[in-house]
Each structure stands twice: as structure tokens, then as C-alpha cells.
Image (cartoon, rainbow, N blue to C red; front, top):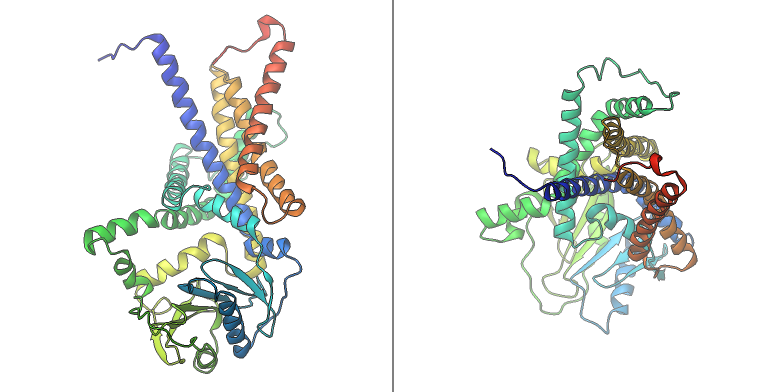
Length: 437
């Protein structure tokens, strides 16, 4: 059966198919590149604001003073629904208090020192997490690309039965397509366990909105909080009546006595200054992949129990381990260095995969010079655009338009690559011109 499309229609269809494939490869490359950079998320924050006060620990009384100081700054506005205290950690030895509208660094006494200004780090995280799109669309798209990496890894093994046998066969000195193929295959084999772990966890994180929404609609009547309660615990009942600020001191003191091996790194105050306020402390468990366990306390420090992320069901522990496994937030600096090395290798695999496809087209007599120029400009443009935004942070400040600068610089590098192709074509003789796409 033939659909009988006209030649011009077929040509346009092939061009659209090529463009869509290139967009998918470009987004996959961007996700891998930014994911490699975001491994140093805490280090980037310290670099952005090098004069922020740092400490290895903070006393419970200072934490309470910091909470009260920040809330007093917000007396002229509606009380925040949540207040977060980031406690000093090895990766980020700072105490930062965040509300719904602002964030402040405090010193070891709980005194407000300066606003938190880490807009570039947050831009980088949003670029990787959701491609600067609204959360539900961006995270779903990124999650789908995580699933794509799983499929590409498995299909690549199936398509190359000798891939493991040739794992150390690298003809890197050759100046042709063979070297590109060898680099692609070798890096893909060496990074396979990492690629599968990262892509699976990335798919789980990215598709959270879709999967959580489906569960909520089908089993909980659209109540998303009820759907997440079996994993992350239930929210306490709200009581909007006014009340004094909850006291975090007895809660932190109880943590030190009852769970000395656990390292508290977040204090969360829910619905502060209301009768329904309560405290959660997120504690890190050494030598565990989980991001932490939630320890619940009342406004006067009475202990209400844990959520079960550390010792609950397998599903709870698996869900709590996804984030750290994806971003390398365990094992300290050696693990981060390994994640950066593997992340760069995975980024190179994506980049070379498209070049291999372009080389194959050229060998078949169907060169795609414009597509190659676009891809070359994009591959080089992503790191150039990231460096440009970082320089803007240093020169302009926290308010620099990072999103516009990044995408504008990226578009400029692609345009320059196309202009260079056009210049080379005009400089060449007529018969030497490559066929048009």
C-alpha cells in the first residue's frame, strides 16, 4: 500500500523528521551536561556568595533566635506557611533560613547577616530539572528523556553484540569516523551502570508529577497529599488561631539525646505562629542512600514519631534513596568527582551519537551540512552559554537575566555555526558544494 505523497511533501516530511530528532538529541545533551554541572550544586552556592557566614555547627538556641529574627522581619506581611532552616553540613557549612518569600543567612548566634543570593545555582538546577519550563511540563519532559536513556543504553548493547568484547579497543589516533564510533562505544560501555542508575532515578524524579497525579486521581479522589502520605507522611491538621512561635530547642535537644548517630540538616516549621504549627526535623543517616528521615515534633518539642523513610516499607526507602543516587549526594567529594567524570562521559556519548549518524548519512551520499552545523553549534554552545551566565552572575549580580542570557547565547552559537557554513560554501567552487538537505 502506498500513500502516494508528492515528492515535495516527502522532502518536507523528512526535514521535519530530522529536525525533531535533532531537537530530542539536543535536549538529551543539555540534560546530561547540566546534570554534570549540578553535581557541584552546594559548591556553586558557596562560590556565588563567598562572604556568607560559615560554621560547622549551630546551637539549638541560636536556631530558635534565627527563626524568631526572620519571622520578625516578616511582621508587615502574611505569615509564611512554611519556614525552613538549613543547618550547617560538610557540603554547605552555612545556616540559611527560608520562608515563602525570602531567605537569609544567619551567623552562629542566629543573627541575620545578609539575604541569600544564589540565583545562578537555582537557575542551573531549574535548567536541569525542568529546562526552565513550568514544573509539571518541564519535569515530565526531563523524566521522559531519562526513560529514553534507559532505552538507548539497552538497545545499544543489543545492536552491538561485541560491545563488551571490544571494551578496550580504542583507535583514538585515527582522524576519521572510526575514532568517533570507538569513543562512543567505549564510553557507553564504561559508563553503562552509571547511565542506567542515573536515567532510572531521573525518570522516577521527573515523572513524579504524572505518576503522582494518576495515583491521586484513581485511588484518592484527586487528593495529592493523601496519595503521598503513605510514603512521606500525612500533614497535621491546620488550626489558624494565633499562637506564639514554636520552640525548636527541645526538639533539637531530643534529637541529640535519642538519635545521636543522626545528623539533623533541616528544621521545618509548618504554619508558624498558628495553633496548628508543628516541627519536622530532617535527619541524615550515615552510610544510607536515603536523603533523610522526617522526625515530627509538636510546637513545644514533644516527639510524635518518624515517617518511616529509614525503616519503613521497601517502597518508602526506595523513594527516599532516589534523589541522592541521582545527584551523587553521598560519599563526599570522591563520589562527586566520580559523578562528574561519568557525567562528562555520558554527555560525550550523546554528542558523538549524533555525529555518528551524520557521518553515516554522508557515507550514504546524503550529507546534511546544515544539520551538522546546527549540532556542532549546539554542542559547543551549551558550555559557552553556561559560562556566559556564570560571568553575568559575577559581573552583573544576582539579578542578571540568566534564562534569557543562556538561551540567547545558545541561539547565537548555532547561528554563528550556520553563518560559517554559508561562508565556506560561498568560498568554495560550485562543483564542490555539498548537496542541499
